[in-house]
Every structure is written in C-alpha cells, then in structure tokens.
Image 1: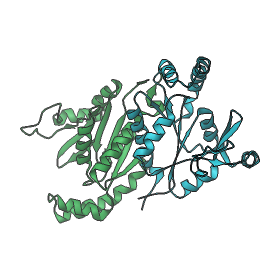
Image 2: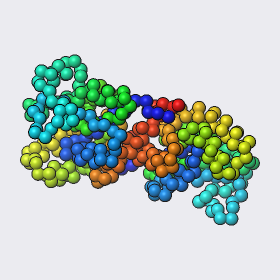
Image 3: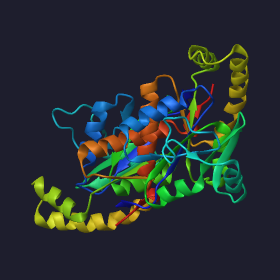
Image 4: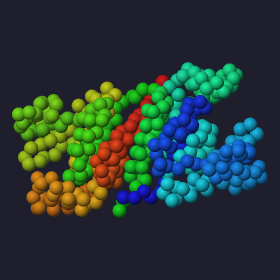
Length: 196
Length: 196
C-alpha cells in the first residue's frame, strides 16, 4: 500500500494565535512533511537564503506570477508582497511529499478556492481574552494594533466553516500533537492510499 | 469549544490481523474512549462479569433484541450468538463519550448500514503471506482453518471501500499510534465540535 500523491495541509488562524510556534514545533517532530516556501518582493536579510527562507523576486516578476496564476494566494503587507508559488507546492505533491503551508485566514481562503482538496486546519485561540493576553505578552504591538487584531480575529472566526479541522491552542504541546494526528489520520484515508 | 456528541469508532479487519491486540494497546493509552460491550447467548466463564465483559442474555432475549432492532449488528458463531446493543452505544454517544467497537468485517458492514456516520477503520495485514504467518504463529488454528481464513480475507479486502481509514498493521506500535491519531483527528473535525 503506497501513498499516491502528497497532501497539502493548510495551517491557518487569526494573527497571534501561535501558528508559527506550532509549525516550528511540528517540523521538529516530523521529517516527512515539507514546508511551503513563499515568494516575496521584500529584500532579503543578511542571514536569509533564496529558495530556503523565501524566493526573493522583483516587483515585475511577482506581478507576472499573479497574472499567470502561478500563486496559490498572495497579499501585500506594508508595501511588500508575499505569495505561495503553486509550482513548488505541486512539484512536491506530485512527488508524493506532503506539504505544510502556514498562512493567515485571507490567504487560506484563496488557497481553498484554488485547491479545495487541501486539508484546512483552523488554529483557534481558547477565547478572545486569551488572544489579547498573548498579543500583549509578546510586547511587539501597540494597544491600537492589538485592538485592531482582536476585532479582526472576531471577524475571522466567521470563516471557520471553510476549514476541515479546528485545533484549539490551549497548550502548545497538545495543539502540536493534534495537528500531527490530523496529518497522520489524513494519510490513512482510503483515497490517499493506493492499494497494491 | 465543547464536544457535542460522542463519535463511534469501528475498528475492523480480517480475522488474524490483530484487531484485539491493537484495541487492548489503544485502551491502555486512552482513557477517554469507552469500549462497546457485546451481548451474547454464550454462557459466562467463571471470571466473566455481566455488563463488563459481556451482557449475558438468553436465546429468547437475544431474538427479541434482533426483532426490535436493538442490535447494531449480530452474528452466530458456533451455535452462540453475539451482537452489539444499540442502546449501550447510543447512551454513551449522547453523553458525549466516544465509543470504540472492535468487530469483524461482516459486523462492520451491518453497523455501516445502521450508523453510516460512524468512523470506520480498516485494519489491514501488510499482505496475505504475513497474515498466514500470523495465523500459523498463534498455533490455535488447523491448516484447513488457516486456508479458509486466508480465502475469506482476500474476499473481505473487497469491502475496504466502505471504510474511512485504512491502517496497515506492519508494526503494532505504529498501528496503535495511527488509530490513536485517527480518533484524535476526528475529534478536531468541525462538525464534531460545537463552538462557544
């Protein structure tokens, strides 16, 4: 019984919910899933490597990618653009590798539109109070920015219905374990196996 | 976010594949799933407790359960009858407890008919040779009985399409971990959570 084709797992949720932390912890315990690499128009930092941290591309190249539908999703953040190259993801899926994409909710909805067969995991804060505490806790954000994020979070929770799974991030270890279980379980689904 | 209703997990597969072993190992690591208890017309052994090992019932009572649709499935094995009481399962599901039912393939197909919303897990031997080795290995079976089981197994593999998941029992620990992941993942499915 062999795996036919890889599965795309989309890990998403409101800003501040802990997507990045969960993703990092997950990758430490799983070596059989490959992380999607984003394209960006932002300049590389000194320690960043093209094709590893990001695909660093020019404005024109990025626009060409948008126009020719080479991005599963994209967004503009503070004058820089970020997107998920479809080619990189498909290449790995076709090779039989599973791919993990950590992304915000707007991005996930774009991916849902282009690849509805992907597995969508919504990482949810235990409640809005807890999210506020975390946003304050990390100390990077102004009160105004925190208020905006909380309002956005409430609005974003409405999109939960487009997801296959919901993982409540009460405790990081438990949340990581749940995401790992979802990946494991999806690999056991009949339509993800070829018998022989 | 609370669980609304329990989920019924049906662990099934060909005879000799290791269903019982997997079930026992699983129950040791999970204390939040409840094992379905069968009704039987066979006489209790000295160490068996009514309502714990089995519900021991008379022939007439068992027939009444069949006629009044109180069994999710039943079968006759060497003049004794065994069945899964629907009431016990529903009671636990309605209370929010998940229920595990370990059962042969014919039984699983009956449950699929009565409760198609259950989660069906097919435990598969790595291949027929391996199953033969296991059946011989346990030394309880005659050659004739082994041959019959192998032929049955081949026929039963055709029913795999009615299942949601397939777990290949290569190594017990890995198989247990996969079943555990499936249970965990199903609990994270959006329709198994109520938001609030």
